[in-house]
Length: 337
Image (cartoon, rainbow, N blue to C red; front, top):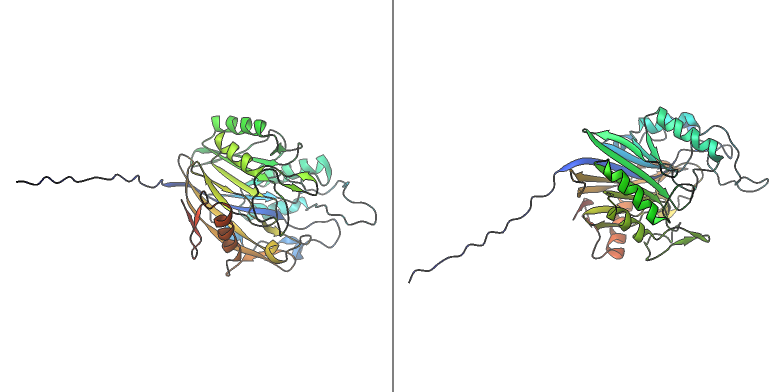
């Protein structure tokens, strides 16, 4: 009797081809004129030299501008005889941001208004003069074009003076509107508790010094539901884990990248990661990697051959997102689904 043979053919979808390769870093504050003596040597000319090759090796590069760029103004945070934890970086330093290859910047954070609204406008003008697209104040969207495709960035913070993490309904509308006339939509947020004990992403609302610092899982998932392709977090001053949601990557915190002169850089506060992420033409996550950096001395960013930042992100991802976390190779720190 003849035997019939059934051959099962399994079709495996080809992986999405990378279309846009973006690198992103967390907090950037290149020194401050207040208080005196907190600017880097040589007026900052060489502060980023050690990381410029990493920053420029991308189609687009993102950073959170934790230090506003202005030359005037007064701060309500500065009281006579007290510690003034307010930042004011000279507008001339915008040329270093451009030279570092930064194309997209968020100005949505708790230091953007340190020296008032006039300082905010100076920051925006300085960035624009050096070809850096920015987003931060309410309803602002940064826009650039790459390979003929429109890329939108929307920066959020847990404050009503900015696009607001805590107003999810409005955030989703803003993202949906950007989605309607853009090929890629990137969301940045400044939120979450701060400090060495803030490495974990919590369920529900996070608080710091009595402030509502956002329900970050609800926010990040909500903006992806509305059309975001990538979500980049910063604010806790330490790195956090990374999650995949609907084939979109969420980086909950990228830590301190270049924060000269005024930040505690001890322990986990002093090392971080540069995130590289590739997006397919339809906006889905198509791979990436983590590049570890550290800050030396008062805050000079350098590559970190010990990979402490990447190792910590991998550990936190496994702990906080055991089912939904992005896969991170334990030796190469490449990212995959």
